[in-house]
Length: 98
Image (cartoon, rainbow, N blue to C red; front, top):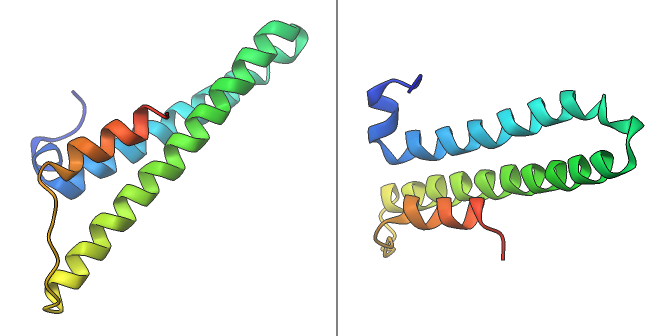
């Protein structure tokens, strides 16, 4: 994989990789969608995928914000229970919208 090992090991790095992948998918699909306006069905599928990646990027940003907030609260000494396997749960929510 193109990403260095240090980034993949940390929790913040994993969340950043997910955010980067959602934004990369969104940007690539946006560029490709400029050619899809000629066909009605391809345009509809492309529009749906654009919405999916936009929502995924917003959820990835929320997961990153929650992670940063919990780290800030823990630094300030307020007791807060951090859930086990937060990154795995956040990635499941980001990539599967139900």
